[in-house]
Structures are given as structure tokens and as C-alpha cells.
Length: 252
Image (tube, rainbow, N blue to C red; front, side, top):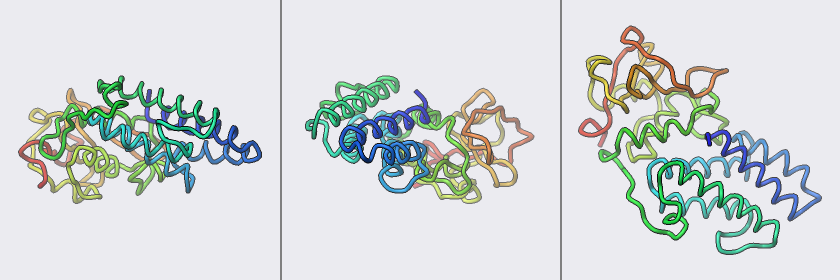
């Protein structure tokens, strides 16, 4: 399940819960739920999108406990309930749907859904201990998210290139500056793609664009308005510099 599909499903569930709890507000909830799922509406819808993005980031990092805690907060904001309570059959049904969605995401990421539901702690990765594999899994969760100039969270409707990089690495405890010109000064320089490793930063156009190297001559990035986060080929000719921010080269 992609990030966009998951957020859309959250919006649908929120609409169903609103209709069951307050039928007179169903039409308004439908509009707010749909817009909120894409992160473009203010209020509860936007907050839900942001919260769910945090859940997905925690899942991608292998932090089952953190994902479980964030999921509980999300569930409460959407339904007025927690995982162990309900305000009626409608809310309970919505909560069940959300719980199932959360469980499937945890399973897909290779985390233990049983452990997360029971509150069992899982080992995550932070700072210099973050692994390239975990970072790339988190990055891929944003495939299909629209490019929005200045976007640094799904609550803004999408992400720009440096916003994607900052969000992905931040989920693993690697603190990067906000803009590409500053991000390109972090870590240590890598001579060429031949020496590049998955998780390195690929800087292009003199520092006006940045993405994350996947390996095998490919990068994941938010390219430009009208496009979405995608995977594309990269060559030395298109690269301004390559920076390694994981491991020994990670920012302090």
C-alpha cells in the first residue's frame, strides 16, 4: 500500500465515522475527509494526514512502539476514542478499520504488528546508527506524493526535493538543514557515482535540486511541479556533488 493510498483510506474511514456519529454533518465531513487525506485542508483532516505520515515513518524505521503510540493518537483524533474504547458501533467499526490498516502497514514493513499492538518495544535506528536500508524504505513510502514547492510535510499537500530529504532522514534521527544549498554541505563528499552508496545525497543543478541515491544508478526525489515523488536514473554528468550523511559522515 502506497503513502497516497493509505492517506486516502484514512480520509474515507474518517468520513464513514463522521456520518455514523453525526448524519447531518456527513456531507461536510465527506468534503473535509477527502481533502484532509491529501493534506490540503486545515484542521482535523490536515492533522490526520500529518499524524499518519509520522506513523508510516516510524513503521519504516522499524520503531513498532513509536508507531503504535502515534497510531493511538491518530485514532483518538479521528474517532474520539482510543484503541481500547469506543463511543458507539460506528466509531468502533472505524477504529477496527484503522487498526487493520495500521496492522497491514506494519506487516508490510517487516515490523511485528502483534508486538506493536501489545506495546512491545522494537529497536529503531537513530542518528549515525541509521541504516541505508531503513532510510530507503522510508523514502519509498512517499512515492506518488505530489511535488509542492516549499512543502516539508503532507499537511502542506506535498513535498519539494529538500523537504523530502529532510523528512526522510529526520525520521531516522539524522538532522539535516531545510534547503538543498545547505544540505549539500553536510556529511562527507563522495567522488563519483562509482563510489556512491545507497542513502547518499545526490545534488544536482549546482545545489538547486537534491535526492537520495538508491544504488544501481537510480535516485528517489521530488522532481518539480506537476510531478510526484519518483525513482529516476542518475548519471555523473547530471551530478553537482554527492554527500554521505550516514555512518561516520552523519551530521552531529
